[in-house]
Image (cartoon, rainbow, N blue to C red; front, side):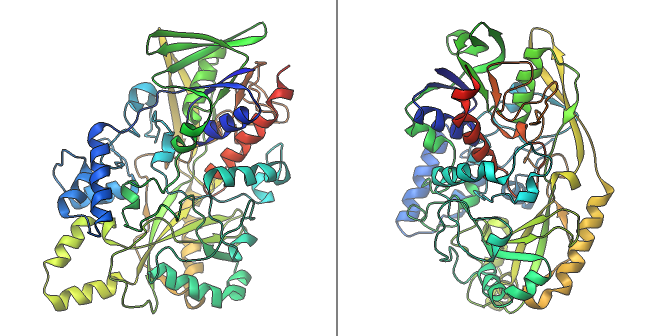
Length: 536
């Protein structure tokens, strides 16, 4: 069959890889923004600096943070670059000095009422993610028409596609190991979080009784490529952090950038996609089309094509809170200079401990890239004060606390028709009071366990996304056993169509706390594997 995959993010690339494996002719249609020449030159400068054994100078940090053109630096800009925080006046986190991940999103994926992270880049948001991958438990699939068993073999294939590192430790009790397990070597020896991991192993049984499963982070980061330069949050100049553009370039398919899919029309024995292409209008027939354009774009394409404007659907997200932690008894030699700056460890909080649903906490060591200007200030201090400051900072870790979708902001999305063009997505949202109560109970629980945990939660819990949604979006075209309008069936088939399938997280009926990318890829592989039977 000749099949179109709309979108090049992790779900689209996973589905495309399976379709190619089955021998189908695959076109990936994508807007496909990519780094410009200035960003590529900056990446080359980073590589040369690191391979010479040097640390990047202040000018290079500034270029990574603010772009090759530079610009005014501030403490706020440093924080914004790290957390990807977003408001009406500032751009989002740059990758190797470039905004390509976010370019054109306001025009190509127009959203009203709320601020939402979205991308038209080649590889989508995987260009800016933290590479964290965690499977879902059986209980995480409550409300789904399928369970963990149906996805297990596809998780294993997704793990291979990601090159996922999965250490075998106590975390497997919360997030099953699916795919090959790997070794347990530290990425950041001597760090505050590495110190905590050792303490957790010694208190594993006590933490289990308290409903906490600790373990090393599971990451799609290649050790054989990683130079441990510590610049992870600014984008990896060596390509060690997985993104969906990497396998896409290796697949035997037709990648079609600069294509914007406005909608589809089904006809006898096929589906026709229309929109814009580099040579003018896009109007092309396929045997089937897979929507992997992202949760909002897939909804917009479906609503515009099926004339379902104004139909409100669920929009799920994981609220994210940043929790500073003071580690107890961390070693003194770390020096505030991390060799690796992505997540190092995880605490899975079981259901019934502080909420009826599990929570997820990722831990990062505090390092100079969290706030580059702070490092400049410290270096200007007298040696004695420097030593005192570094000794304190060496004991700081940052917890990223994720809430499940059901405990996060309640939201719906609908598509508003636009004359002569694609519709606009309207989001209506309201916070849940219970979220704060859950966080208060979590903090109290962590403080009671400060001995075995080895840290003390500090005051100052901060919501990472005060101006909008975190970006773990899901649920706008949910999978149901008996689907209705703007829903899909177990095979991923969009209700009211014969040859259009939803393979991205728009198909998720629920959203647990841990990262969704691994499950999104597994589900996309599952749907693609069954496509030949679904389309006759």
